[in-house]
Image (cartoon, rainbow, N blue to C red):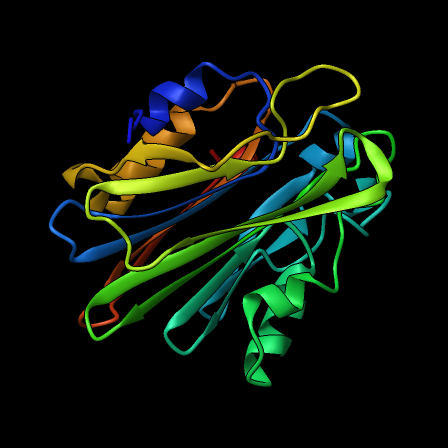
Length: 241
């Protein structure tokens, strides 16, 4: 498996949109969860990440400029026991509800589809990271149109059980900045997770600096010590950077 430096990969992209990165440090001790958002419209860029208990939510930076909250105000991160759920929309809550009832990540997303924002039909990307007795594993999913056809929803799932030390996987909503925005294609991108990722501040700063200056909005990164469950969280917002 060829792995690429995630910072190098992101620097080469003008508009990956929203992205999820899950992985494991080289010594297998620490899980990595990252989520970033980008925006081109004033409404999309008028956002910040704020903590919500042990999770995360989006808020309008300037409430007076908020025009349509339906697809931009949501909880990207929620925690359920030893499972962390991260998504780019309100499907976070759907996944939590299904897991709480004893059903699966896949069951939850079978009830959802891509976003109704024609003509882009933004994919819904989702991930779950689980740590159990010092072992980390994760799943990723993308729900998107079939070649831009809103009559067809592709539901793709990728399972990494257990996670591979020193490796992560990145998935994002768009493959380029063309109009209409084309959906991400292929498998999640395998990336190198080196030992520097154990430092949440350094890792978050590195990823943030790799995102396009004109389009980046907010970034969240969390490290989880798999044996102890101890977490360190770093949030970076454009409007407070």
